[in-house]
Image (tube, rainbow, N blue to C red; front, side, top):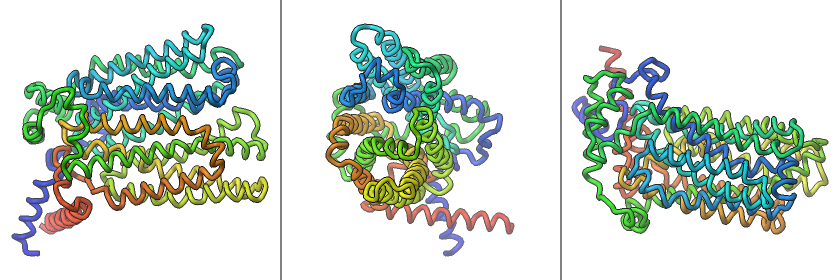
Length: 528
């Protein structure tokens, strides 16, 4: 490649995609200059952690004997109904996304969701002392999940739009990992509760722990700013500029990143159509062009497979059986083993938060799903042979080992990268609409899978693990064939790759050329 052609390619690629160019002197992640940006990140991640903590309660609380006595009576169908109540709240929440997120704002949307969650907790804690505790608990679950679903969804958009452009990928990955951490924290709280005396407060205290999130979020709401993209969309360019100066540029108004970011945001927003509320919740325009059909296919399949995997907890019937065979008979020991095993999931989520910008979203997802497919196969085989050969300790060990290691590989991807990717591929004006569609589909599928769970136990039994393996293959192939690489692009630039008839090939090719060109520049600079 000639020097002239190389320079031309570098300029072209830099024009097309690189968030780093907005601020070539971007501050270090843990520097003093990033402290305020970290505060925004904390606001968002706590909102998601509350979502994860609450969503996992119906799965973890039944291990407490007092919960069965007070609420479900040990009835698996009653427990399924309570889980359905959570899904109803999550199903209704997307109807509010467009007016809240695009009308009220990202920052205020988190607060509104938090208030609903607080009300839901109060109903679950105090309303269950009456004659129909199962009904009161179910109503509380609807309100609680409605609130945390709103807070978690808008927090996702908030962190992507308010983060420093040089660190957006890291913070987006970290945000996804927090869901796993919130779930893990709930497991730990319930584990501690197993050592407390049986009684009405044994299961209520883990629910009341959510008030901690509420207090922190309300306190941070008075401090953190609205996102620059939302402010520009409302014509408040000066306010957006002030936010970037104070919260991203560390007060340096001369930083060229400020105007470069504002110009890019304004250009993107100006090029997008405006919608009324009823137009904005109409999903069909998202499927009219090939460009958007590709995006929506990725988002819907991602949620489809993820929710089908929610059928996996039906296998807990068989893990309990193995626990009994191993002599693990009390709730504390069982919960403790699950916590120890799920540590693999937490570790995977942690490392996954660093990977998207270093290795690329697509690359990391291929690694993660590939590893998950391999170990989910051994999980299914271990359970199958355990059942065939009569309580074999060796096959029980294979099952649990594969189960936990598969958790590492899947969390490496599904928490950070898939979460980050889903928010990157939609432009500003359609971000809320696409989130509405995908969350609506996700909640509907979650509702269906929870309803099917008791039937799955009867119909498929331990064969459910083979279905889980099959679904993981579907997701792996979807990533390989459909997911383009978005590494290094700004939110406004990401959508351009979908204009190509072959976005996957186009994005991978352009990334390789860009990295090769940048490497040549670095080598030339060192020689000079």
